[in-house]
Length: 370
Image (cartoon, rainbow, N blue to C red):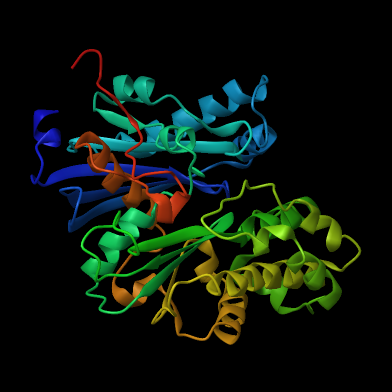
């Protein structure tokens, strides 16, 4: 750990992310000093099986209960599978699986044991990234914005740029690349835009037994129900000033709004709700971004991308257009954040989570036999 804690030294970190879309675990290697990106390393994906996904889905929204240990076992085994092949790393960033998120009430809950993972992989693990932020009045999410700041620098952005992550929940990071540090005032604004893929995934899972609407094929056949879309946009969340965050199931009533629609019309309407939430979010940006770079599974949905292109006043493109990996950006983010935690650097600030002051969350666990 001496090498990892030495500020300014480049280390090889491995990050893992299991998102609210419940598709699987992403793992990616990043060479970084916790400030700048020096190189992107290999990446790997381990999908959840249908049975594992059912176990995880049963734990969503639960703070206690027998579902949580069962889901934690799934999370741990899947992470060992995907992380073990990457043995030549100095540090692991382990996010775990978010099952409940209510920062203004119970808090935030990510299942998975970082200390046990460190023992199983014999590598130091940084985990529990969100608790310190919530304890200091923050939303605990989103946490990728500090990495987005580093990405904006890496791509050579000269003007404000926005990163839009469309996973289970959508979140937006507005970046001012001229700021000296991500925690500086005016450097970042980040918040959840609304539901993204989760409602469509749940719809096609319940009605058709499919994990997601591949390539937006179902939505492409449907017509958006304007009345349902208007009701969705009347939700008070959209009027709240950011930073703000959501639980995966906060908009579960969206399914009820489309319950009487055909499969195609329901998928089209839920997809339009995602795009409309992003359009509403853009009004909060301190200055218009020069472009919106999309990451996460939503960028692979041409129907959603077209809706965004029509509704936003700036170019919209997948992050691959600037040389980034939209499948692995969040896993890379937790590799980056792990190094920052190990070196005592902040990982969130008032502009990203609403926390009272810049804070570095996370627990560092050293393998017991190391």
